[in-house]
View 1 (tube, rainbow, N blue to C red):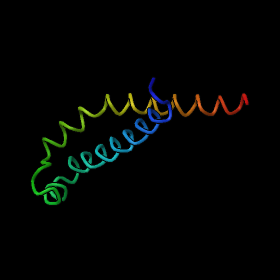
View 2 (cartoon, rainbow, N blue to C red; view 1 turned 30 degrees about the horizontal axis):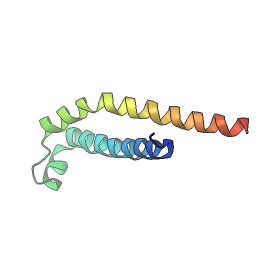
View 3 (cartoon, helix red, strand yellow; view 1 turned 135 degrees about the vertical axis):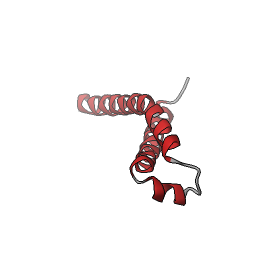
View 4 (tube, helix red, strand yellow; view 1 turned 90 degrees about the horizontal axis):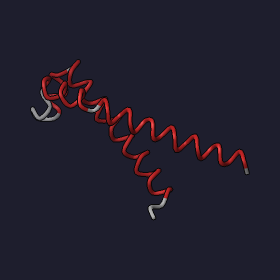
Length: 80
């Protein structure tokens, strides 16, 4: 059986990582010269756009799970 606390931590940290990548790739689209120089050409404008587009679905899923687990935890505290 998987520990619920561990699953919550994985979801919370995963969401944080996704948000950071989402922001960096968004800046890679808008301010591509700055991000391209910081990443030594690793994140060009087309690559940033592609990653940013592919991250929408995982971001929504992790955000939903994050809200769900947080809501369940608070609801359980209110009942006690």
